[in-house]
Length: 287
Image (tube, rainbow, N blue to C red; front, side, top):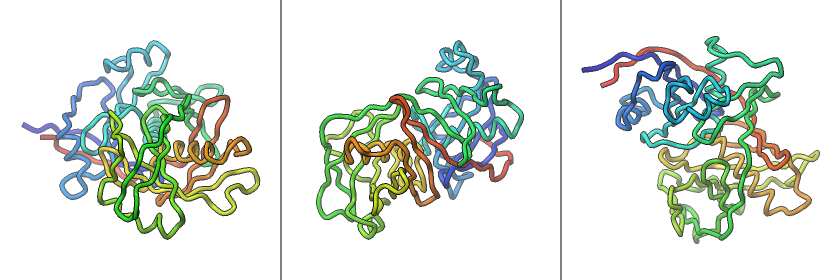
């Protein structure tokens, strides 16, 4: 028996999502249903699902509800797996809330959104919306990353911004563009929960007018290559900042295939800014 549900398609710099409103938490999406909805041939198509649910109506949202965050972003990867956070997704999530009248910004121009990585504070910014991703962690060790198109394995830098990343420095634009990310890169040793993998080229010069500039491509766990990854952008900027040393700036502009995103570091937190768009809405039958 099938059930018809409403949806909206949205994206943040080409990282696209199927938004499913479920304010009262009545919809229990299986991994298979998520995978079908995200399928680009047999479904709507997207890099993931954003289920819009009140924090008080989802078990993992109890702490968010207690902290006053009315809405919880229940994010799933395109293969149906659960992810801790999505930097592009949360901007699209807020854009949906504001455009549908489900939420407004407070007197300070802020709102808290519940996620599996805690309640994250969001505001408007010159690029669209900015989210405080919270504290970050630069991991020890140098995992090796093998990718199709790289002649030899390269050392990576582990970065945790609420979800795991491994960032790899690439020699130049030609090498970055020549990567074949239709084949999943391999991390050795493999992280217990997997990781998103970012391949990064610094601009020349790296810093212009006090802002660092880099280019990036990403392979997202549970998805594949995407046009953008918000937390990956933050991780890439943090890794290059770590490599550059004490004189490195705290503001960055990151070019991804889907556009440009901003990153800044303030008091031990990393903040991500960028646009969000809603494309179309409709209804779909769930098996």
